[in-house]
Image 1: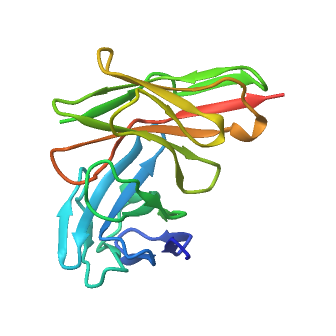
Image 2: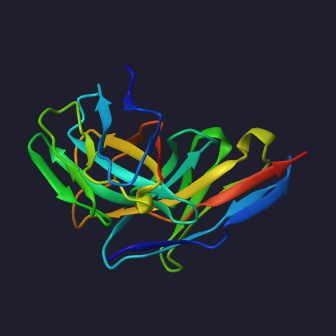
Image 3: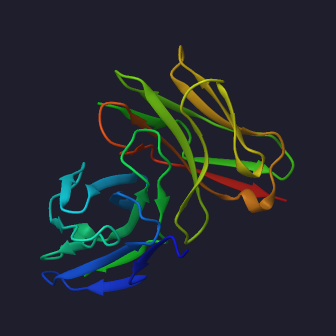
Length: 114
Length: 114
């Protein structure tokens, strides 16, 4: 069981470039989410999904797109990167969407936008 | 809307001393409370969670937390810390108004020195 995996580990982009952060889980979890972590801000929810084909916005969705075509994968797309998107991105998953369930986190992707 | 306040951004402590990391929350509905730990350059790992029942919750690595509904607090404690406990600790809350989305505090950096 690899758990939650994220690629790449580190990425440098120029302003205006696009990229996709990959997230995959092998635990057959229905619920997946993306957070960004900034110094002194904790983690903030970007988007989440309660199952294949179903996504919704979190607290800070602007500038990010998601889709969920399979249970295993939940990629995060930056269509036109901005310096304000420099952050550490974490993907998380849980078995279902019920309140109180433990979320399992990936190791993170560090993104620097110049 | 729910929110989490971690009262200390940084807590320095000597090895083998006790420690308390403070967390207060606000929510208009029933809540579920979590403490996660993040070791340097890693993802988040669940320490413990409170769903219902006994207000004293025991977690991994000798940590425990007490849920106090009247004071809307969920403070994390350890009677004797080790150098290896140096990490950032996040308090988080989810409620029963939707899915298992977490709202995080800004984090407390625990610095254990010899």
